[in-house]
Amino acid sequence: LVNGFLKDDNGNGKSEVKVNVDFNRCKNIQDIASNISKCILADSSEIVSYLSDEKTHVFYGFTAEQMPALFLPQRYLMYFDTDAKSFTSFMAEEYKKFWNEDRIKKMKRIGFNSPTEAVTIASIVYSESKIKNEWPIIAKLYINRINKGMRLQSDPTFKFCWGDKLNGVERLLNKHKEIDCPYNTYKYSGIPPGPICLVSKDVIDSVLNPANVDYFFMCGRPGGKGHNFAVTNTEHEKNVQIYRSWLKKY
Image 1 (tube, rainbow, N blue to C red):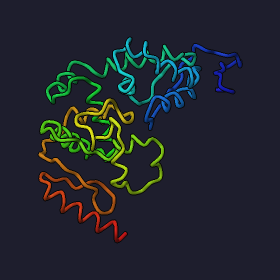
Image 2: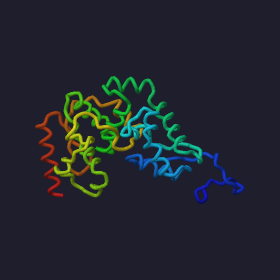
Image 3: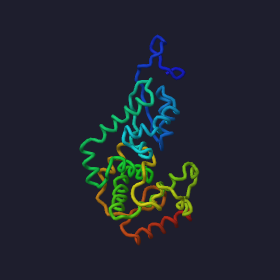
């Protein structure tokens, strides 16, 4: 790759060469566009414009909020001269391959109405914990809350509502929960309108294969590594007090 263009052995430009394309650690369409534009010929504004177009949403059967669920982060091999439309079409095919009959059956068995709902829950699970062993547990915790008609009450959802304004804020406070936003699961019941970040296939599979637990509550564990889980609010309050005592000390 020389000055943004691929060269063959003789130094000639080659547009029909395949390149590795990565877009990890993305939260939204803008992040996807920024990452993708570094790998293929389409620029970020073109990608954002195409993915934000209502005609694109209708064609693929997604709302604007659901659109990030179409993209499954990993390394792909694409032609360097891929444009925004071709990129989206490519990802739609990968999406269809992933959401095979087996995964659709699991999704329905759990109670989700669409893959985007499962991906949205997966995005919340991943935002809560980067510890892989916790993903199936947290997934079941949220499924339990949904089945019981409880609000999810997930901190990453209201943090998402603030955009970049809470970047660098170490402690989220009650005043931050007051923001009126459809993604704020402290104010709104059910599953948010769409994913709050892009998630890998492993996280989605953790949601589709949840742990067999009865938990409804979770709280950070002293030391900042992992969570303590609880079935009852009484148990949860004990975990909260333990965590707060640790915070005051450290």
